[in-house]
Amino acid sequence: MVKKILVVCLGNICRSPTGEAVLRHKAKLRGFDLVIDSAGTIAAHAGEGPDSRSVIAGESRGYQFTGIYSRKISVDDFAEFDLILAADKQNLRDLTAICPVDQQHKLALFLSFANGDVAEIPDPYYSGAGGFNKVIDLIEQASDSLLDYLQHTKVQTKSAL
Ligand code: 4NP
View (cartoon, helix red, strand yellow):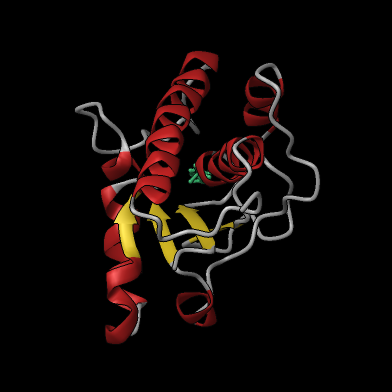
């Protein structure tokens, strides 16, 4: 049963905190009883809040970033979480390299749950505001599809039940 979801990118200041905020918001709206967290594959920004450009783009659509601080993924996360969603293929390769063999089935690209033909969430760090809005577009669609999937496969407990 999927109860705990971890979203992972490189720095845990742009894409994965946005994924955490969007998924948490949408899950709550739909009555899902899920724990959502995020992490990075590097520790360069550990302890920092999300990038201000992600916060501006996300808050303009009603998402909240309060209490989210960058952290590097730890080996304990692979046992702790039921589903670990990578923003891009390099993130997935980095996770695959450190994930215990018996937890590898938990790894997936976030956009593997989306309906579109885009496989990866592009790194917006060196882009303008448009890049940050594109990140949210992709994450919103994938989050809706992921929650549909969890609902239809009945692998997740709804708090309303
Ligand atoms: P994120 O974006 O992986 O979506 O959080 C980045 C954040 C920081 C860096 C690169 C990407 N960096 O090179 O420090």
